[in-house]
Length: 145
Image (cartoon, one colour):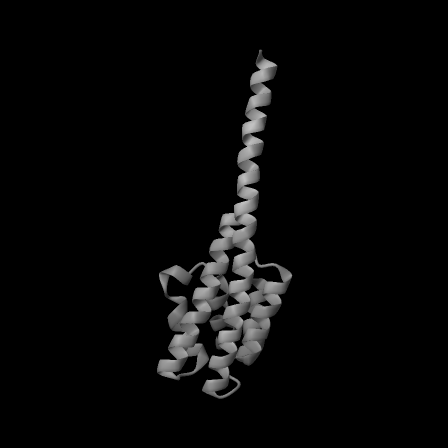
């Protein structure tokens, strides 16, 4: 569970970096960027990317489609992470390119902070489960004698 969460946050950081790089070089509409980025094999597990595109195709504006896709996502983000992702969608495509790039750097830092916390939890609880497994095995051995 903790490893999957860490992987999810790594993919999210990668998503934001990809959006930032694509936006700075291509400077095209955010929906076109997301469509292209969602096809990357490393990011296909982020189900909200394709869901957002589908919502926009039905006539929703991008910010509400993004928010709806995040809320419907099966990705295991906590509430704070979902809120940050939703607020990211409210900014994308609504301001000039430089402002978007600045905000993407900020959101990249937010997600890196979440990732660091997840990695720390993974290290701490990973060791705990190893010790607990050893102690349980030892207890079963003692009982078997």
